[in-house]
Length: 206
Image (tube, one colour):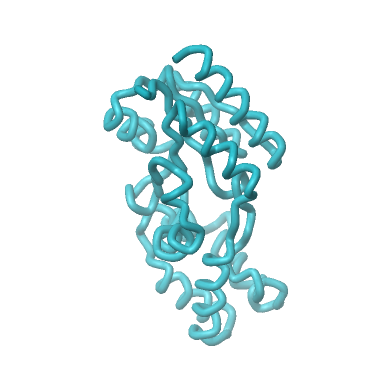
């Protein structure tokens, strides 16, 4: 079938909400370190998603801030990346959608995503393409939309025939301004509903 539509689906907050270092986060020293990593006065977390830091470098910073051993942090970090999951019912409906449209995992994420999460979850079997911000060097709402537009040029589909499913308002508004269609979701049921709505639309407009 000649596919004429593309659907971009976000990762964190949309398909998965698991956290890095999940087994260590209850520790008080990790709470202090995490605040330094994601606090409002630092760009480190976003720069990590832009590929300006490696996961090894971030874990060394976390070791410095928390006082915990790097080896302990790294082991827990890798394990937390590998045990992330996608609900089976969501994967099933994505496979149905792929019969008539391209489905792309589009995530502002770190180098660890391709290193550990993608192979552990076999995500390359779930999606037609995976876009990770750390590979590109910029986030979804930067570089005039190149995060999405480069893929659209590659598969020769217009932005008007593309959809985004994301839990965050900012990328949804940005995608709509580019000329696409966006679904801002809040939970798994809304993800499934959005995919089903898009699937029906694509079916009627092939």
